Image 1: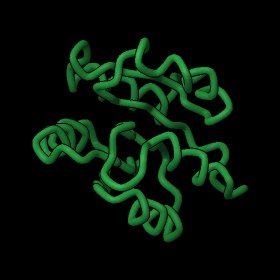
Image 2: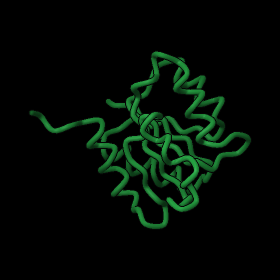
Image 3: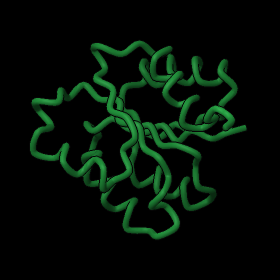
Length: 128
């Protein structure tokens, strides 16, 4: 079973997303605190990280730069699922490729099913 590390401060969104992802066959480890997410990743790297960029205590971009500072974690794909629009991210969006951000989903325009399909595509690519 592929593991998803979900870093999301909104309990309702997290619970709903966990339900959708578990039904899709994924194991989900949900963390609110970015430091706790680092500790979880240290115990076993996830297949993908789904992160909101608005987090308590530390921003998602700051977390991603710290996460990428560990050589073993540089290739783990990241899906950003945030209420920050592209316009609000214009100062940092250029760094998404460097941070291995595979997809960006704007919460108001994304269903949880859409997000689950993105994660499925990343974790279970089509056979060649």
